Image (cartoon, chains in turn green, cyan, yellow, orange):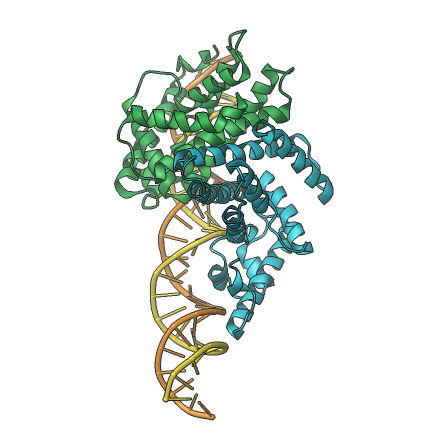
Length: 209
Length: 209
DNA sequence: TGCGAACTTGCAACGAGTGCAAGTTAGCAT
DNA sequence: ATGCTAACTTGCACTCGTTGCAAGTTCGCA
């Protein structure tokens, strides 16, 4: 598929680097949960991970980036989903599968990842800076997906239509999800929520099918 | 309609305040154009408007806010458009009119507003912080419109579906616009841009007609 | 065993944003 | 007019995110 270069961590340096990176993530999640996002400084996180404050920025470009550590991998997964389409797939089918991979990338369920996901969701709702960053990450993913989808169906989708299509789907899901989040009858039934979401986006996107 | 309280600027204080606010906006636009967004400090802007740096934050909550000075008015216009719908309008029709009002609020064309709009578009493309803020403003507008649209058609749209629908529309337009903007790099002619925007929304919204 | 590249770190600095306290000024009732 | 109050302005000191720079340290590899 193409993640061959991530599997073996051969060099010592690389292993150390990964360990430090993970330590930063763990420390950040723990501190954000305990003292809140704004109540936690980058210096706190660095100290908890036992590195110099300055060094933090060699690992993450900003404080917010800690909350979206795997955005690149997710986009890759979506792009792969487009590349590996079946010959008789329609653009909409491919897009739906790609979007599923962005939302929940393949891999064994991991406690720490789940914890991060929940934390992220809460912070997106409550911290403007985090919300802003989330929207930017989403936009980047959207752009990448649109480009690849357009290239996958050059005859049926010009660049513009591909971008509009992807925008509509992402926007619909995003809007529904947002509404769900701030009409706070929150996370009761994960399955029930999924169905409501499915129904809402189905109605909204019917014209595109 | 409901902007009665904005027309007369009776009190001296209020007039002065408006003047200072406008001076800040003018200074900001001029400086951003001349020295770039990141090359301009809040202190620069305050000095150019002849007020103390500290006072700036009594007028705008942040540097980015300077670029979205009328966001509240725009949302109001969209909400009004929903309230003043014709009895036989379909949700989609209403939504279209509301979105048109967000994009270009009614009022006589103003040079300074046009200049600001162009500057904003350029900075959204080039400055991440501005892009993030723009997305947040858009999201807020989306939320307000979805709520009111849902209330206007309580029988046909539940909150969730309304949110998904609005999200799909906005997402489609946004996606198309984005593609258009970063495919071609020109932005000079105001009329050319308008046509381009028209074409993008046409493509984006075709499926709904 | 070295040598160069990559990494770490402290320091100084800049800019956004905020709380506070002291001074001004406009609005308004008398 | 007079004076009281609320609103506004401002400087100061401070926190925090972020960056450039100039050491020093460590690793990979020939």
